[in-house]
Length: 580
Image (cartoon, rainbow, N blue to C red; front, side, top):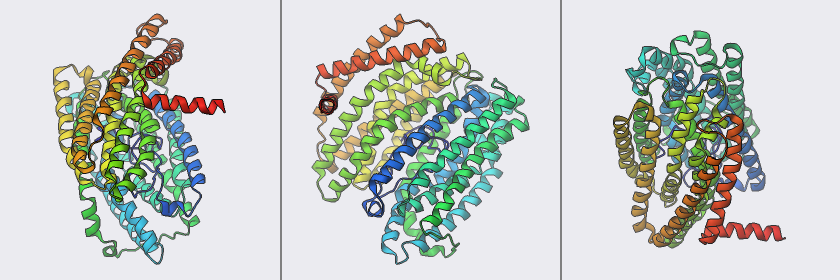
């Protein structure tokens, strides 16, 4: 239900949701979203290795990957800018993501990984033959899909773009896609190899391999700037050399990531022998298990197609796909740091309680998680809204990314702040269904949610100027996330009982008061600081440091005064530790 760009091996492994119960952590993320958060592996796998060591490896790798992934985004933004060329690159990169998601994305985490885990335990050979068959089938399928996608590159371009930006823009997207669509093969291979390694208790290589990808693309963007400079160019000015360098470097990054995983297979004793007896995989059962997840993915892809069509109808110089992607990345970073950590902690508890029939405990965890996520993410949303302009300047105003693009980014970020808390809550409820376990209901909920999102986005696009396109997309996201949270809560109640709606609403009311108070104080302080309009980098840094500090202190003080339990508990814990 995210409504955003899909997970990416080009980004850091943070920000997306943990897989459903029974799945293991995979760091070879699908394309074009800010990444996936590390999730605690099943107990039977943890027993094979040190849980503490695995946690340390994932934590360190997550930190490094987060940093290199964000640096990658900054360097690409500086090289290509926030105008047509940057939008064309972002659009071309979503095309392999679309194909990958249809073939493997959601089905990998919800179906294939749990099956690999069971085969690892049940088969006499530790699931070796089954994994070999699965990898063989995947390699054949992914290779065929990549070839077909490359042949159909121009058709895919028309699916995600319009004639508004001219044939030069569409041709650029297509030409970039010729070297980027083969990423389908390497991304899928990385994901499956990572799954095999995880089920054998090896977490280091899958955690660190995406960092190689980030480094390659950072170097590619750096070489691009060194050769061609960091300046805004039109699609017609993108020579063959420019196109081959930037798209080929992106493909090379994913290929190196996949190659970096292969030596680890031997380390865990896995030998990849091609096996073509695919009937032994139980394809009918796999298809039945993955049907609802495929439905979920397919509906989401429809929303993504509409999203990119609208973004690509914006005029030259208007906020488009690249700016939307950058802002969505910031949204997912906050979500990944806070909400995913909370959901990751609650998921095993809810799954165990559901398995034991203790649905009251599931409801209690849902209530606690909703209140905690809201209370902790609210000040971050306030910072995004109040400090949108200095954030855009400090993070993205480099090279070909102009002052006008920074101003456009600020507007999109301001409205994206409204979506942060509803998104986190909707995802918490979605994974409560997975804990039951139930993939059917989230897939059915996703249909009206995506339809609502598309409707709001189209209405806003028609009603306002194209300059407002990316901002309107964020409003559509926020409305759909809120609807998803309400619909999920309503359908969960018959399954788990009351979730303490009264207590949740009281907490949300107090959080809203504290957030509004912090926002007003923050706005006043920023207004008094130097830097009207689009501030210089120095002025923006000053606004971030002082404004962010004031917002944080004000929110904390109001939260303590209003007795928001989720905040006072954290403060009390810190005080006790400092007292020791």
